[in-house]
Length: 324
Image (cartoon, rainbow, N blue to C red; front, side, top):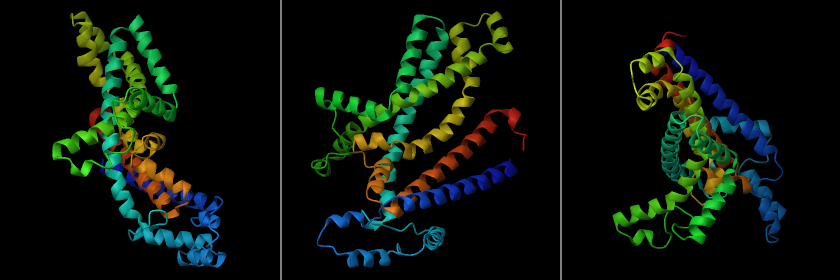
């Protein structure tokens, strides 16, 4: 296990370096720079913009900028955000807890509903309920995330005003509320984006879990248990489900860190101040340090989640423990 873990960590570091390098050169190759927006301001001369570029080293050769960037990251310095006028590490530290809370709630709901739907389909395989739930899963899997987010926003915030329109808290009243009221306020703002992501993600879990369950219930030990008189419900929920959860472990290890920066459109629609919204705004403002740091941060979590899922998979499946 130690050799396997060391090899996976080395591979993960290589992936992170490759991602950071590609993102760095791609964003610098895009037209414009962080000070392009100032061209619309007639009060800012070209000499002033040139002095700004020189101050941040943007007038240096791209390779030299990259070497300096790698050196700064190695020292733990992620740079200074042009658009937010604050250190990048501070911007990430303020956005990460919001995304972490949103992703945790969304994944727990998505996995819970997805597994429940898969079990319900397998217990009623071939019947109307199986076809209806399968059709619903395919429909939600096919819906673009931004379209579903806007539909839920319009339905539950405008037509039926049950929840706030956006943000993570009430910008006016939150600080004046008591502790309990602040918690309720945050939960009310969390419902719509979390509901959107859960609806987008549970079809993936349901379809993978259904396939794993169908494969598991045809095993020899299931035939033996069925011959002993075990009910179909117990066969699926107590025996097949336990063995069919292995593929879901792999999905969970990759899904959580991927969603950490993948809920870009959902966070933008609901104005949720997380990593996704941070990435969108940094792209629009050509904020090189902020965008590269956010993508680098996300790639680290994707690699860590992948390694964790591999370790859990080996721990749960004895057949893989001795493999190198």
